[in-house]
Image 1 (tube, rainbow, N blue to C red):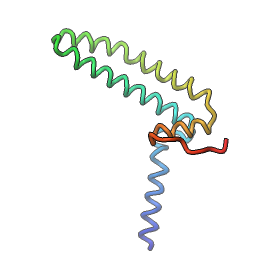
Image 2 (image 1 turned 60 degrees about the vertical axis):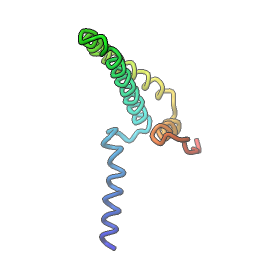
Image 3 (image 1 turned 120 degrees about the vertical axis):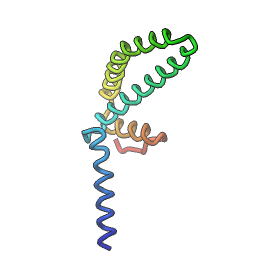
Length: 115
């Protein structure tokens, strides 16, 4: 019985600590802001990779041009993504942030809230 309780305690600590370590905050709106920015960055990386693949047939010079443009545009795009995420989250209440974060993480409907 002690082993089961210890195992449950370890699992509980892991479940609680993962979001804290991942987002370094317990604020749902800050967590949502970071999640939105990360998703936008992932989408931009996917688009950049598609462009790289599509220009491979034009040779190394075309690929180098795409890489150079990507180096210049990436920081600007990341800044824009972070700004858009911040502006979106700024207009939301804590309950709305929780619902949206839930929807994004689970890919489903947000749970009903009492707000």
